[in-house]
Image (cartoon, rainbow, N blue to C red; front, side):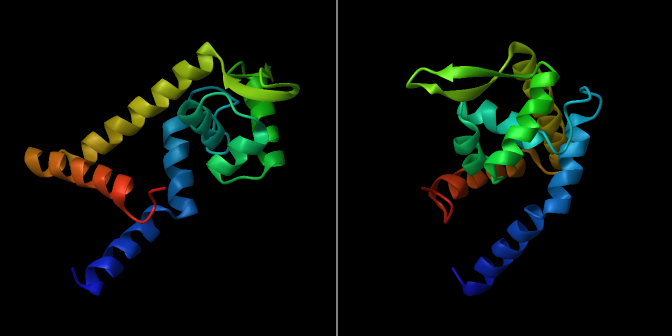
Length: 148
């Protein structure tokens, strides 16, 4: 593979990861899901859905925010009935953030909206091309420069 391909992929990923692009997508995914759910609280909900219960500090690392930012967002989500705080079974002095049943349903709605948007974007592609893209993207994530 040539260096030009690497630059093309890096440029496309740079565009995809722009904060303004993410904020616009999060806004569309959270529309009409309640006052507590918006583009600001989306990363906390989504992060908890991926990781399960976490401390604010651990979740902050996962979602790219600081601990106090996660705590503020979690408080909004807790007020909306989407997140609860529970004792950490490994350390009774510590507190974990966890999704409530309503929070899990809200995340499922957001994920379905995202899947629908992706399906709509790929609808003009030949079906095998879209499937190949999905397989290759999964491979790139699993084996590429971002894998652990």
